[in-house]
Length: 461
Image (cartoon, rainbow, N blue to C red; front, side, top):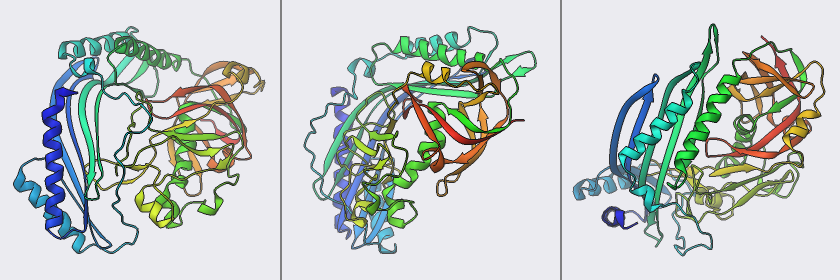
């Protein structure tokens, strides 16, 4: 990590200057979130290389408190004069902001945790642009091996950088990171049959094996698009529907997480309150947890946006509510302690969010689960979803995209423009039937099994 020694020194000095200047200007306490990043990106567009670009730079954001008033300002410079102005601006904003008793900047121990998280790979930090071009070429060639595939856009980006949080109460946290992220968006076309657009994204923080991962993920994406060329009709019904891991996360878990947000709980907008902790709120088949300790996921780290150490956190255990996502603001209002779920970056004040959600798999293999669905009229397998979900009520309605029709446990064809609707909390409550044993990581972020759910309305075109 010596490769960023100079940048680390400059970032820490700038953060220290911002804090000192804010206190001199009259702030009671101050917190600085800073980052430095170097990135090179190769873009793909319309079947070919489109653009290669590189950039690097710093970002700094300062949050200050004056009594119960908060101010925030940010910049992308290390110039001493501008840092002084940014600190003064944050203090000035705090001066005319409304008071709020839940605002808080707290001391957090900077000691090492007992968990090891490898976010830096020396080999990846020194990777050449030529190697990066080779990786992008392999991705493009593998994806376009079949002439029916249409590439809309894609990119392969390699980066290295620093992320820090420090405050006037003694908190000082710093992490270094390398990453390679690749993504593709495209469709398949055969004569007059054209699939809908689909996409995927994957990340690796180690150079070892990246080439193989790029080729295999591009192949899987290509094959899934080609599978969608076999199309046929669906039938309207209300009953059993299979939700892919992506659909489970996008339709169902996103709405659940809204109600687990500590700030939503504090505002009284969540369907659950602190006295619901320890009670059954969803199906006993559900075990949902959140972790920031997997280096091959998008959002990982040993500390959060406020410098609080992260942790593995069980949110729902056998349908029982066990925890909320808390930052210092929500924790103070709910008379609890932060559990490391302040999220964001230098460009904004911290808020609450999850890191990488994981829904634990069930007891049956997916093949076994599918073989049991001997419904002669067929059932829908929702792959992706484009529509509206009301997180408060849980009602959802939208189009099932890239989705499949199964009859007597066997794949028949993909369907187009089929609508699905239902309620998240009924789907994850009395209508929830089973989960596959196998799970899938979606876009290097959330992880989920396939779910079988009853009571879903399907409207065929």
